[in-house]
Length: 337
Image 1 (cartoon, rainbow, N blue to C red):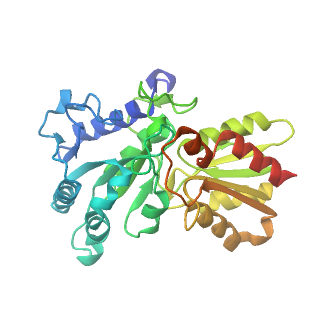
Image 2: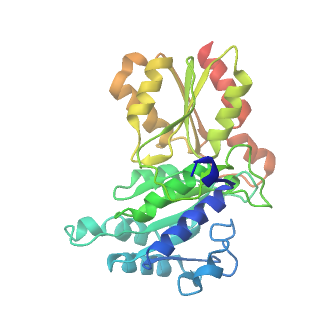
Image 3: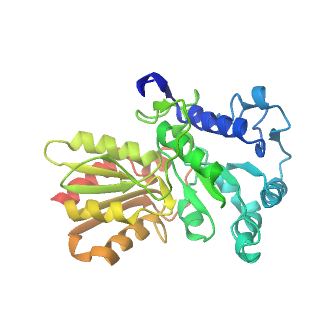
């Protein structure tokens, strides 16, 4: 059977559900729990359709107590099950951070390796739709900073499915961070790009392998999540006078330093774009990795990220702090000129 015959164009949410359903059919120990994930199907369609096939015993709505149900998922994982627990908004990590960081991330180490914690923590990230400071963060850098967890950030349906298969099968805890604006839900239109052809069969995308989503010779743009698509749009707008290479990190932990450095060695110029806060975050880490591995290759560098302020509620203010396509274009022009 040809590859084309086994592919179907999917939104990112449908691709995620496809991977989850496959793993649940293959392994009875896989189950999904969270707030509004069963009857409602997830407020960002992260579980839409799973209840009909697997029932409430494996697609479980939970009380509004993140500490309780994430703790329950950790316990189930330590007993050999493979739970997927959804934190509805990444911002809510504050009410259950002991369970995430002191238990989920550390228990394999604290037990001397006598048991593992094979669970996936899924969570919605990002702004762009005026949900204010407690529902609009990404917090990529916070989770990437904490040892013991792998951190996944898909930007397309193809990547979302492959990375989900890999996450569920991994014997260590994985934080799977999906951007709301990329899911393809009706009330929040996605940009062009996240909806892609996806193989119907299972496949894995290895962690720690970035993807060069556009090849170029003049400047490297390194980013992830929603801003992959803004970077690609900026690159297309500038094509001709400036040849832009766009690198999609796909996973933050592990981070594919080799692909980043190889791209900068080719272009000499680096722009890093992140929807997280600028200080102590992904932008600084990427730039440092390049400087440590080949400082001579780095002729010039710029970074774009959220200023160190709470995400505003007002639409014009939110748009002002979140790096736009136009801001990426301006940074690219500036670094080339």
